[in-house]
Image 1 (spheres, rainbow, N blue to C red):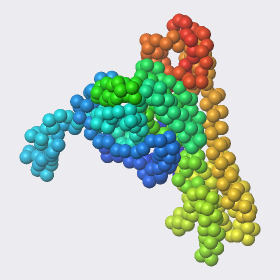
Image 2: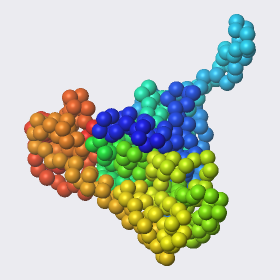
Image 3: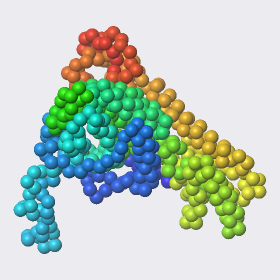
Length: 492
């Protein structure tokens, strides 16, 4: 299986597309630009969901659900938001089909069934949610509102790639309302920190926390916090965003409250989200030419046991041992699968589990039964060793932690070695074309310079790092004064 993968060095994009399909994660659907997430891919997404959902609830948020359709009048109420998403909107104009009198057996849109007002299929839910919040909020006693929803959204894309960019995708979107600016700012930053913690501790992906420039902000936001990750091909990927919306949406939908001084004021807002794009980040951060490499914290199956036998008697003995190991691992919170399929030979099973990134593989044969041992293979290092059965569950539990940490450190070392400081535009272009990665450079702070660099190099400002210090310098492009460095990169 894995031998059929194009190598990353040969064609990174082709490698990625092949891997997603061959690892049985997702496939293109009959609907142009949309995907089918297959059970194995969805099992990974479910693990992401479960962990994020836990983290959201620990920070006081509750789940709710809002309509898929947004009346156009509501959508256009916040002008910057509407303008920012207008070109990506799918719009419902009619509510009924009828038999086509000119084509027997076919249907057509009923021309008499036009909606009084068009409905936008949500590209994001601020409009419908803030229209709803208007009925929920009267007093400071009604605040804060801390809501998250798990949903699908539609953003019409012409060039699509599985998980990374599809017309319909899955995500979560948080929408909160606060009595003060300080509370809303703290919320936006807190949720960006939650995303960073999830990416690093769960996905084993190191990220840089920062702020977006004005031109890269979410449409309608006053400030956008983000986490940026670096893929193995040297391109950046925005892994999550959290937006401080100020009072923009409250003013657009006239959401006022009586504060604790008895005065009317507009509510302060945030929104934040991550999507199935994280699946793409996971693949491109850790995987290799043999297939997926999954961090144990995200693997649907952390350990797989493959029996090697010649007759039914051996299979029974191996099965008894395998089920004992499986139950012992389950007691330690480790997910384990005994692959006893008779339709596949051991070699085919090894290839499949390697391709699908199962962190640890145990092989048990007749000699292992005699010696009280098993063969233990690691997916991350592709190494094998013979280990004793005594203490095996504890060894595996510790080894999974080692693998998780190792994957993070490997990705961190790669990321850190691909952050390059430059002083001139020639250096900038050289690093971008030959080394790739993040480029740390001075910028004069103007959108005009930002746009010109993008036009000339296709590199964008990924973020203004939050941990970056002020440092006097001159802009890498214009030579004008600059107060600090920002991070540029080509990006997905």
